[in-house]
Length: 454
Image (tube, rainbow, N blue to C red; front, side):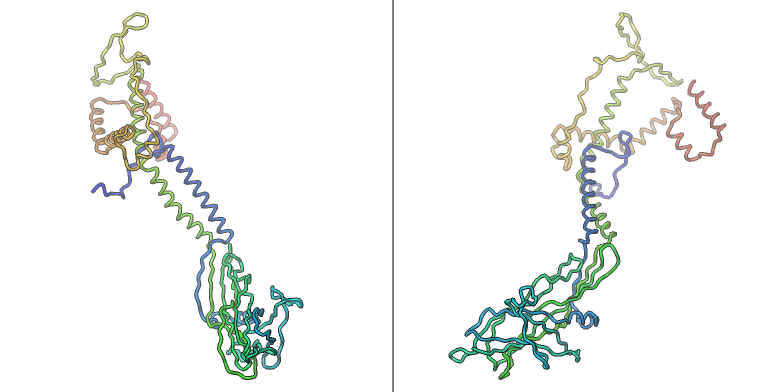
């Protein structure tokens, strides 16, 4: 079942006086990780300060309950339309006028920008909304009727084709004022110029309410407008009058948008949310490599200390009573031809030392093979796996405790003097700074120095 344990924390050990195992690969990935986080931080802060990050909600509701009276007065303003005749059989003479039942008014010449222009090639007119609930509003319509050439030689009604176009709404959610009139919209209509048959057209508009928060502050704004939605028609028998009429109607539904800009806390939370998975990804990239690297470094330093111990010059070794260690006195001929006893007092010449190969591991092989511990037969992985076995065996808790027990038994039979340790002294001073006064400290230091001198 041990193989299935992925929750237990690995043991913490110190390596080369460092608080954690470190290696060059980990340093490279750490720099890459910090650069990625820095780029993400700059990007998200840029998005935040320029108001590019927001949430958008859309739903539909009845406009009579969603809009205030002031907002309704704004959206019911007359709309401008352009009429452009592009097909006309028999060159029928078509005339258009606006009437509210009391007075009539003809169309004005305009240009392609819906501006009044005596030299314009289009005809424009303004048409207001009419709402049944508002009794005081006038019912205004636009009519078309034929004055000449309304029928062909066979007595059939002529057919005309024309465009009816109006400035329309375009929504830009990234703009401070999202309701922009940058486009046009309309419909192409074919109709017979029969003054005995009347076709009523309803130009339907839909209200839109846009609520938004502000960037970098807590203010909120509302924008309201309408957009051209569709054209509906119905035919009515009406002899002796116009053959077509147009009026504006308001859709009962209202499009409602709610835009909320992200706050600085939301932005920081998003960055923080990316920190953990990205760091986990780099941790995974370096995890297997680091395990092999730490164990190989431990083994390498064991070899280094072992070599230093074997070739270290020993001088004036004072043996405590009860310490029975026989030191062989080898006879060696010195450079002057005299015999000299070797009581660990002489220095071993460099040429007499054992020449060991350098503890070199191919880092590229270690990195790519360590992910799944593949190519175990490869020399580098053989060495690394042997280092793992060595460290795991000697750093195993039961082995360390057992060896400590053996050392304590040895220590009781062969007392070893304890030399004052700098780290232990500093710790004791921090724990009990006022335990000793200055005189007692001085006496204690003198006693320790005297004991060490003997």
